[in-house]
Length: 413
Image (cartoon, rainbow, N blue to C red; front, side):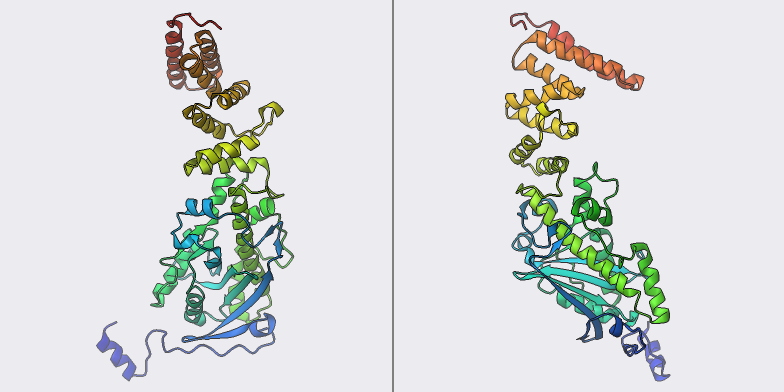
């Protein structure tokens, strides 16, 4: 707005912007926030904000897991590309979850509740900042920035796509500096998707809670899709009683994130397997280790769960094929042959292909190599593939068979 025009408006007694608008007086009705929700007023330079605090000691169990990190953070740190400062201590990380006036974002959407937790040597500190009125948003953002002042990083669940961009936009709107700009960020949703792509139909936090953490929410729980409407109803009626369920929902989300990160650190550091972890969960771990270039660790974990003699039915053959390639590069033929034979017995095409290559190039046992190449050819012939695709694949296998036929027969089977 033009400065001269703004000055004219002020002379007429018209105020612009929101800087000079005071916070509304606390609602003193029978069901106000102050009466219904135990908390306290926290004063900031932009007014007061309502703060709720709880403490959970180190022995507190959420579902079947502790809120305190019990494993090594190294692999999670590698996966999340944490800075050197972000790797020093998880005590400097803050778990964060917001409840907002909408799920689609946009300039009209704001967070009316921010839940936060961090732990220390005594246990887990849990804090919530609640807007009793939207006009308190600037005070809340200031209180949040103070809370994050000494943090090295933030842990969220889908926070990279939603919570943090939303908060950053609100800081911009209020002409405040965001505390999240330079922080490390661990978004557990992406790791959950990676770990349980095949196991869980939904990787929503509520589903991960039930299937992995074994968390059961009480009747206080409010479904996430109802949260915005409950807040809008509160603004109309000033009856804060329904907000208690929203605060419980937010609390459980934050605590579940802490338990989930603990789960990942225990699992990824290959410590004792938690009760909630099945062997199937370790195949995604093997994939993660391979992607991070930790092939030795990947092979060790794979060996602990791959038992072909037991005919274990839930082998992830995609992972097994990648491990077989590591065995081949390392000339670990004993383990490789066991793996490839098992794969061939389970009609996994790579088993026949790798065995054909091994017997042709390593053992120079050409009859055996031809047997496995022809077995692969017969298998591919039986597949329901497009004509061109099948033709090309069979052409490649036939090329190997013809090459083997031309080899000298000095090493019969």
